[in-house]
Amino acid sequence: MSDAASVLVVDDDEAVGKVLAALMKQGGHNATWVPSAEAALAVLEKKAFDATAFEKEKGRIAAQLRDAKRNQLFQAYMSEARKRFPIERNAEAIRRVVG
Image 1 (cartoon, rainbow, N blue to C red):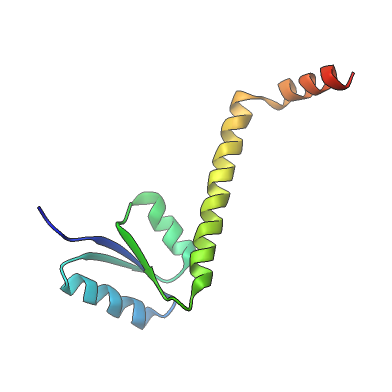
Image 2 (image 1 turned 90 degrees about the vertical axis):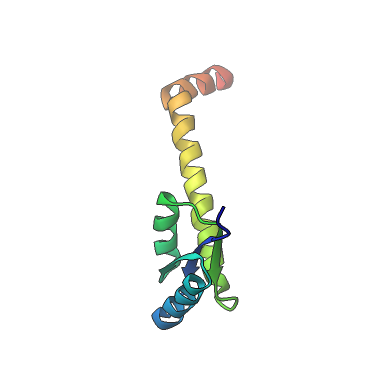
């Protein structure tokens, strides 16, 4: 069994990101570098990682990932709600209540 972890490296500085990913690979791990939170989200939609590494000072990257994921979850929730409870049905229920 392998102890290799899959790590997503998020850093807007290409040199730093690629060096960090290379060091992780030398340590026996699978590392993928992306330059932004948006790129990270695109990759995360296709693949799961054991860990994500980003600069501590770049807290905005973590915030962007959190906010984007929250938005994705909300959109998925609303999409499912619209399927289960069509607007026409909701409008009819409101008319019955309001009178």
